[in-house]
Length: 391
Image 1 (cartoon, rainbow, N blue to C red):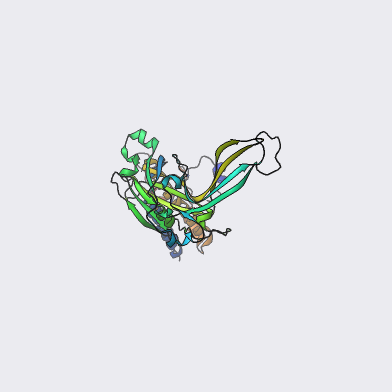
Image 2: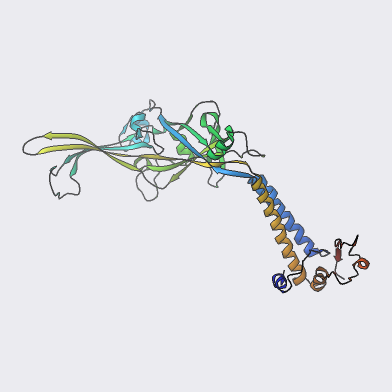
């Protein structure tokens, strides 16, 4: 390749035709065979077989609806070890879930402090010497017993909007009731394993809070780094991933969408402060205003939907094959450089690879077996196969 561009500018009326030269050299043969095998395995095995490089992908969009269901079973609070250090209470799903509205980031309450506070600065005062105009008079702390026995009722839908509206094919949209799914976990080495499967039976998915904690490798009685109280009292954030895909078959895309749940915990605590004003008791000479400040700590579940759906794309397949050919071309260029610049017989190889032919000069190619053929006044084609080997 050395001097190609400079020679082109020196003599622009020259056409360069590639010449096929077979060099009988073990080093070059081993290099090219190994490079060809590696590139082919990479393209065919990895890109096409594993990564499905013949598919075009579109990120999904979707919706998810969450509902906390269940109740605290008939358990003996005296037998709960965590109830020995702090008072426990039995609660239903309305007390445990916060807020009681449609949200993708619900808090599953495990700890509550009810602080009864009174206003210490007059409602119409222009200044207050305290950090807060309310001061706590009484408080009560308790833990929610048996929170692991509640469960999340989950219904979600997904679609690849552009693919669906272009084709109106139902394979690009679906609902969890009619899709197969699974709950997965990861070992400490990162290996993925299935914890629970969800058939396409027309029903909503139910995942217990205890199952979520297990999948996220969280123990409520353990202590987060940098804290001294257990997670049951400090709270924690768990990211809940719902991942969709349709390339799980060997020949993708598959006729249906599948999904999986995966949970991962963050080293963060979660607390919500909710003031509930109790009103004003009018007395003389001052009025007394009270409120209940509720402090909630617990498991904050942050739900996200992610993934992409694929469909066959000729352009994606053509691009993959173009990359294959480009890598082979780079391999050839490197091999040419090694042959003509680095090997001991580089001068002989370079002489065999380079040849000048003019239309007004007799080259004697016929006698040399290089195949200069003429017919009906036409130049014909150069059919050259030169074999070069070590002396």
